[in-house]
Image (cartoon, rainbow, N blue to C red; front, side, top):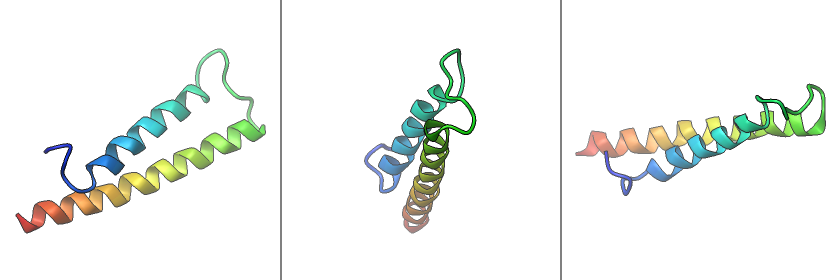
Length: 66
């Protein structure tokens, strides 16, 4: 596993986006449920999940060729 492998940038980026979005959901300054920020964070989680899945597909396809 190398960070220069295809798909790894998407995987790392998706994890970082999910961690940043998580800070808006938990903690004492969490966004209230039903607010615009809360739904934006849920959209961020959906985008992070999409990039995680596509990154894993690219990485696994690359590893299968080796």
